[in-house]
Image (tube, rainbow over all chains, first blue to last red):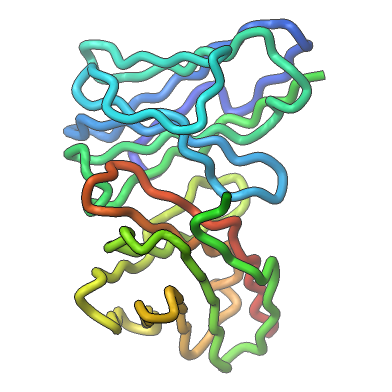
Length: 114
Length: 112
C-alpha cells in the first residue's frame, strides 16, 4: 500500500456519460498530480494541484476538470465521455510541489467507455 | 511530440545477467531524471534518480547512467532477478516544471 488511495479501481460507463475519479493523497502530501495512461502509451500528465490550488496543466481536455478539496483529496471529473477516453488514470502525490521529491502513485482507476 | 522516448517496448534477459534499459530525451532543459517500476495492477513506484550534474548514480543492483551530450540515459540492473520483471518508465523534469514527463515504458522479463 503506497498510501495514495484511488477509487474506484474499475469503472465501466457508456459514451456521453460523466464520471468522477477520486484520490486521497498520502498523509502529509500537499501536492496531487493526475496522469492518464492509454494503451501502449506512457503516462500523460493532466493536471497538478498544490494545497487546493491548480499549479500546472498538461494535455487535459476541456471535457475534463479537477479540483482539490480542503482535506487535500482530489477529484477528476470526466464528461461527455468518448471511447478514446478509456485508459488507466493515476493519481500521485508528493510533499511539496516539485518533482524532485519523486511521486507516490496510487494503483489507478481503469476506465472503460463502451 | 514525445520529449522522452523509450524505443524498446520489451526486453528479455536471463536471470543473473545484466539488464540495460535505455531512454532518450529531446528537451535540453531537463535537469532531473527518474526511473519508475510498475507491476500489473499497481501504480508506478520510484526506483532511482539522477541529477544532470552527475553522470552516474548507483543504488544496490541498480545504476543509472546519464550522457547529457547524447541526451541519453540508461538503467542497468545487475544481476537481474525474476522479481525485476515489470514495466520500467523513464521520466524527466526541468527546474521550472513541477510535473514529470514520462516515456512509454519498457517491459522487462527476467527468465529463470
